[in-house]
Length: 380
Image (cartoon, rainbow, N blue to C red; front, side):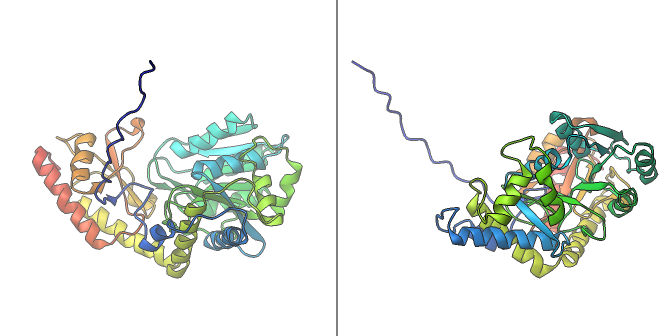
C-alpha cells in the first residue's frame, strides 16, 4: 500500500504591517501605482500591451532629459539587469571601457565588464573619495584605445553624488561614449542626457521614479542603438539591440514583460512627470535637510561632508552603545525600515528619503529613533 503524500494546507501568513521604507529602494509608492498592479490579466502581444510599452518608453525618455533623437528600451528585471544589458552590448570587440570606481556600484560596473571579457581599465579612487575629473582627463589622453567610460552618478553605497556634468564634458571633449548608472539618481537629481553628455543612461522603476521593482530601462540616442547592429551580442536575454529592435521596429516585446509591474511603472511615470523632476528634487531636498538636521541635533557623525551627499540618502555612524542590528530591529518594530552598508564601511547605517514620504513621516521616525536609543541606553 502506498503511503499518502497529502499534507495539510499551508497556514495563511498575515502580511506585515505597512512600514515606512527608509531604505534606498524599493520605496513607498503612491496608491495609484499600487492600484495599477490590479490591471486585468492581459496578453503581452495584444495591441493594448504594445501601446503601454510604447508610452512607458516615451515617458522614461522624457524623465531622462532625452528628446526626439532619444528613446528608451525597457527590460523586466532590476536595475542591474539593465546595467548588464548596456555594458555587455555597447562595447565592440575591439573597444575598451574605462570604469570609474569609488564605491560598491562602481565596482559592480567593473565586475560586469570582467564577467563578459570586455577589455577595460579601472580607475579606483577609494570609497568615500570623490572622482577626480583631472585623473579621468589624463587617462583618456593617455589611452586612445578607450572607447567608453562607465560611471555611477549616485553611489548609494556611500551616498556620494559624483560630478556627472564635469565628467561628461571631459568624455565628450575626448570623443568617447559615456554610460551612466543613474539607477539611484534619475528622477530626483539634476540629470539631463544632453546637457550632461550622457550617451547611455541606465535607470530603474523602484527608486526615485517611485515605481515598483521589476522594470528597468536604458535610454540612449536612436542612432547609437541602431549602431549596435554591428556589435555581436554577448548575451541572449540581455541583448540590448535585440530588445530595441523588437520594441521600436517590430512593435512587440522580445520576451514576456512583467505586464502588471509595467502598468505600475507607467502610473509612476505619470506622477513623476506631473510633479516634475525639479519639484521632486526640491521635495527630496527638504526631506534630506530635515533628516540631516535631526541627526545633527542628536550629535551623530555623518559619513560624508555635506557638499558630497546626494539628496535622497544619508549615511551615519551607528551611535555608541547600540549595534546596527539592534537599531534596525527596534526601528522596524516601530514601523520604520533603515538600511545597512557593506562591511568595509564599518558600523554605518543609511536613511533614505526616496518615495512617498513627507515631513510627518520624518518627525515620527525621529521619535521612534529616540525611543530605541533610550531603551538601549545608547549615547549620542
